[in-house]
Length: 308
Image (spheres, rainbow, N blue to C red):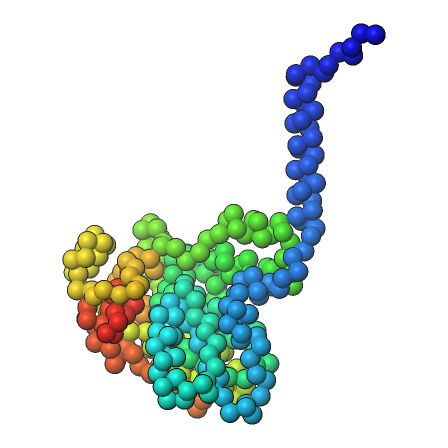
């Protein structure tokens, strides 16, 4: 009996192509339908859980000082020194919940603190002033006080309203990530208009007001900074400026046009002082006034040397 003729190579290729396309459609459909069991807040702010903050006490009756830190990389940089200082005075009667995260703004800290509404902290340490400046580099018509003109916050708002994430959303978010990377020089004109000052102050106001309702005490820090008069990116890159060595060292252009960044920090510090004066549960530590602006103390525009 003669063998059946085998399919032609061309027919075989068409079959494989159709089969692959079918599988792709099935995968996309599944990814759009399947919801990730992890909470949206675990995805955007994993430090809430990894720090133990979501399991912090709901009362203050155990004799242990519970300290919550909220900020960006500047506060993150000094958290270990804070632990050593408090540990030398209080021993093991202190618990730390460090939520400071590189590139996070005052908006992130407010959202994180709101997620901990059932928890009690004896001291909340808050430091912001530079990362919010990155939010200025959009046109005034696009700017939103809740920072949802930035894709990161727009995605967070969308996903938190749904409660859970689909696999498809997570894949698309990852593929289109737009973090707080350096703005392009072409967007520098947008930075002349400091749009974040009011939003920054409102974020701090809402956070310290919530802390007052919970009877949490707040220590709020201004942002110390140093921008040499002869600053250029090339000089910074080639270590020709009066900056010291440190664990963290970024060009000022990471946040925007250097002069605009410095001006933004100064205005945000003014708003920080204003907030501190309006609330009895807030103590101000004015780092801008206490830390000398010199290379002895700074490794870049805002990060500190070991001496600083």
